[in-house]
Length: 427
Image (cartoon, rainbow, N blue to C red; front, side, top):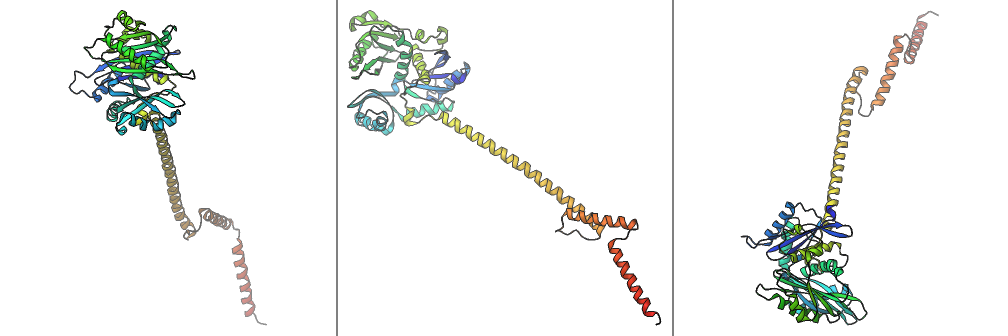
């Protein structure tokens, strides 16, 4: 069902890749993916990019409930910040002040997201990501214009790390810690093994991003970044294996192994995703596919997500849909009540009008029969009773029966006649 399908979008300055995932047993299945670019277009802006994304989804008939966005590493910066607290709520309340002090930047102009790298009795070490608010707002507004309101907007390294944890870590042999490196056309990503705290708990893995120049030696660049990443993971287990994906295919793994003194080999991101090769025919770069894939996987993640939207524009899609549904239900109920009221009012008006017409006709007939006007205080029921009495009296007179009123008059007449006759007779 489309309500269980989710869209992951990787967005850079001039390109984007979208991956639609659906449930497949306990895992997920790639339903479709494609890439769009505005490098050669006259109007190269995020609105054009969002338009191409919406058009691509419509052309491929991709049905999904909610999208999630992964931002290219060129759009944000990564910092290491220390907090004096270990409670996530207290960290969230103070992380802006700690970050502003650490990077000496006006925090009001940036959106912030963070991840707790490790915690102890002295506080917590945080990995903080910052991005310009106006850039994020521009991307969000452009996507929302085409009904692509993302639930999350996270750093691309977070999406890639999620993809690797779900798809690659389980496939590796457990004979030592593995460091994963992904080199796309313009960016590099390092996902280290989880660190181990003093209490023996597994902390967040070291993640890093860096830019890759077109003229740089990818092998030398990768060797240097591996050394930096392993040095940052002080509490992590020693790395015994390096797994690399290079979109350009220029890395010499034999030389890399000799420089680092650890095993080094390639990984196939497409194979890890379980996608058919023809499914990725419209994708520009497997690395960008993996990032977008990881963004879509966020809908199945129960843990906290490093989300820029929580800071500058909290997602209200579900809340707004509920509000719209309630408003529609309230409006429908109101219209129904108004219609019912109008209907019954019309019926009452018609009944009152019929009653008035009936009384008017009855009053004319009453006046013709009784030679008197029907008073306003007399009800039709009382008038009908009086007419009934009049009818019965008329019927009795026709039958020769003397009514009570006639009997009294006759007796009085006889008495008066008797008195008159007695007065004129002689004594």
